[in-house]
Amino acid sequence: MTATRVNFEVNATESSKGLPPIGDSSLETRRAGGKAIVVRDVEMVFKNGSQSYHALKQINLDIYPGEIQLLMGPSGSGKTTLLSILGGILKPTEGNVSLLGTDLTRLSRSQLANFRLKHIGFIFQEFNLFPALTALENIEVALNFKGIKGRHARQEASLLLDQVGLADRARNLPRDLSGGQKQRVAIARALAGNPQFIFADEPTASLDSQSGYAVITLLRKLAKEANRTVVMVTHDPRIIDVADRIGSLEDGILGEGHSATTSPVWQFT
Ligand SMILES: Nc1ncnc2c1ncn2[C@@H]1O[C@H](COP(=O)(O)OP(=O)(O)OP(=O)(O)O)[C@@H](O)[C@H]1O
Ligand SMILES: [Mg+2]
Image 1 (cartoon, helix red, strand yellow):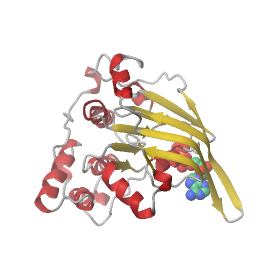
Image 2 (tube, protein in one colour; image 1 turned 135 degrees about the horizontal axis):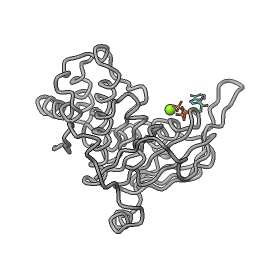
Image 3 (tube, helix red, strand yellow; image 1 turned 90 degrees about the vertical axis):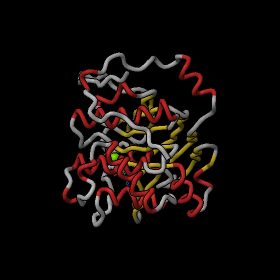
């Protein structure tokens, strides 16, 4: 297996042109191949004893292969809940979620686990690294679960760590890594096994400008060159330019677009 590689030392200020506008021919070509994700009439109600909370309301969403979809919105608006439903981590109370034509809501627990293992890379908001394993081992274990073992797993894990600029932290435990370094290990782990779908919850939240730009460049490259489908939850206005589409959540309702930003925006060539 060959990982898609980017130069991690890319300089955010050197970027120029930005993405072509939505509707250009390359996007149309990508969309001609069918939908990667179809969400229909999804509702999510959390129940705790006698209390219930309606976290997502009537969510409908289509995402195509090779697209980068952002989910934005205030804290508590339902971003992580929606991403978790897309990634098969949470089952919606109502509605359907299809990935590659497979309706996740109809799969058994073990079928869903297999589907996730094969097709989904998930970057958690809280990283969820194994505390007793080194950075390298955290990735190696993910590869082992995907059937890549021994020397091959170690080599691939090293490559992935190198790809996120952490080759020199391979033997560190998570407690000996900074927040941004843990985030990058979590990103490398999500890319293990080269999944078709990458779901990322605030992937740049703990990253400085250079690391954040490099991570987003890597995800963009996976989408545009390897036709991976990337869904990112973010509060980070610097990412806006990378998106093919932006969904805005407000009190569990999904709308299009985002509010204007005066913050610096990374541009991607
Ligand atoms: N397991 C749960 N039980 C009850 N309520 C929950 C549960 N998980 C999430 N919620 C509620 O659902 C709403 C949406 O939560 P979610 O984590 O999706 O928000 P978010 O948009 O990701 O916020 P943030 O930007 O702070 O991460 C919140 O009001 C939250 O308290
Ligand atoms: Mg969240």
